Length: 186
Ligand code: 5GP
Image 1 (cartoon, protein in one colour):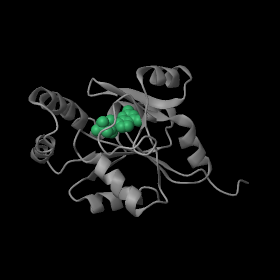
Image 2: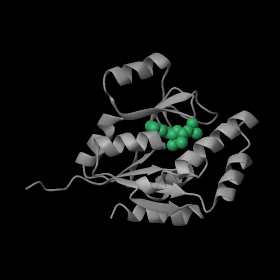
Image 3: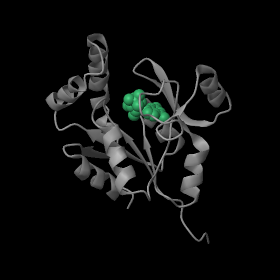
Image 4: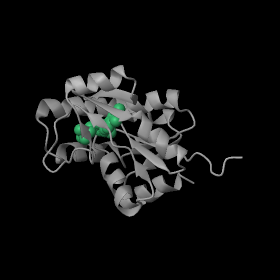
């Protein structure tokens, strides 16, 4: 008999601007026992983002290589722009080591993980309301009008996907949502 079980993988997804990154950051800060996957992306770093910490920042060719080598558990073009993907082997290694693992990814990616790893637990992070989601999306103020409209359209589609998930956590307050997410590791 194995001396430990493979630990649980929780996949956190949800609409644009619902606060997935903020909830994941809360978990990172307060529960370092949970391993959080570092994605690869072709998006350029924002100020303050560190390669290997927030993302593995790769060029288009680098991302092509990851795909060609089948090194990604899932990948997707997010907001019609940049590619994002989850490196496969670190996830496998953490689960084999019995450590709880969290992926914070978009809906397209979550669907791929569901096919590849059906034992994972899929958590939908929902906004308290559509108005609140819109406020958060506009309030962030980092996108122009066209980009905001595009993100809202995506968000409508993403909200409709809630029923595909095992659990919904409503992100009214980050520490509360974070604690509910942690409960899913059992
Ligand atoms: P941002 O560019 O703001 O950091 O992230 C944009 C979106 O990409 C977020 O919705 C985030 O969940 C998603 N994302 C980040 N990493 C991955 C990944 O590895 N795979 C997929 N499919 N989406 C990701």
